[in-house]
Image 1 (cartoon, rainbow, N blue to C red):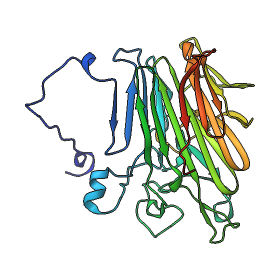
Image 2: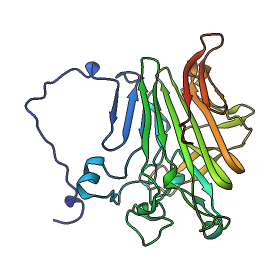
Image 3: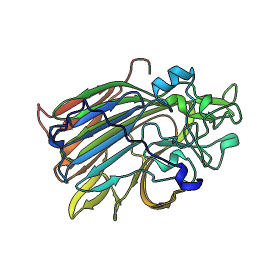
Length: 326
């Protein structure tokens, strides 16, 4: 038979696995082979959950067997993307099934295009069509095979208070720029993501380019209300106040608008954007929190940042330094 019957699922049975109550399972797991990282606050229906993507387009084991990272048509140009689920509702869902594979459909940075890319938001290699553009050199400005490096997790740490991943993403952004000697530049891009199980996520991004560029830090929300103010964005979840607090060291332009994404379902989403205009380096720093989770703060400096829990001498919950090579 043809059509939907061609799409089948396989269920494997391992008799050596012993059944266990779900409450006994660990609250986090790093799926390093594929580059998928998950953590949750518990197994109850009101739990908080975060999922992060950072790794090769295909699994490392498959890449090693083939000798190259071939990608698959249903993959997404969304390295560094994350989702945040709390109290039975997605706050940051990202895009559902996309009609076009675009990085702008996800919670990650995109750049305003120049030269032959002018007039569009340029994302990661692999974007632009209904299927993930895996192989080159058909279009070196879009094909994943043109990347300068493969995304990877540089550092991870799991404690009772937080789960932290530091990701390298820069080699996926191939920007046309008439000011460069060969007309092409790759960005530097490091993302630090901290999940705080008591209802918060901290995200700090640093991007660098050889020539001034304009970068958009985007958060795609499933919120009914998202209001910009002098400190970031306000919203509520089941009647509880929440915030996207902006601790970036520079005051970037902030907007909140409903966008129609290229998606088959739930295409209209409220998007919070921080826009860094015409810069060679930008650090975006936000905390997304609800209720008690709004108390966390970020203080940045030239070397990295401190994530603070409250005030006073014992306020520092985590110190993160940028990689020495950047």
